Image 1 (tube, rainbow, N blue to C red):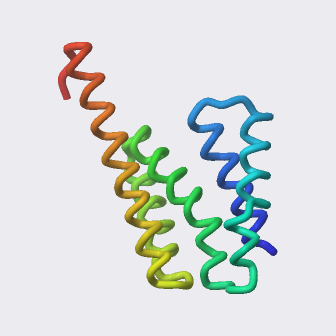
Image 2 (cartoon, rainbow, N blue to C red):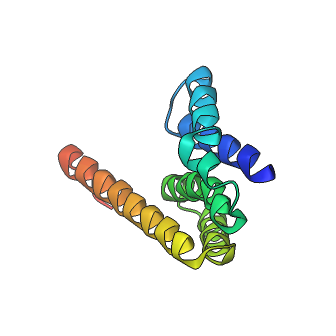
Length: 121
């Protein structure tokens, strides 16, 4: 049951970090927390852990890319590592791959914005 609450909370945090309004973030958190994928896997605990790990990993990756501090990067590493070893190995690997693709997208977007504005570094 704790995983359901964590799934909703981390989805809320991710959406707030992306700039949505609080009510939209609450609705998204509830939708992910009580959605079909999450509830369908409730009987298999190692997989349902990933319903909380996916938004948690995306949130820490986004936070680390924005802050660019050792603390933020360390937190991202801990959360990503925990998601890989916290249950079903394949789902952990898929979660890490999703976070990696998301990070690559964020880095590419930042590079494109810097090229367009003419700012280096």
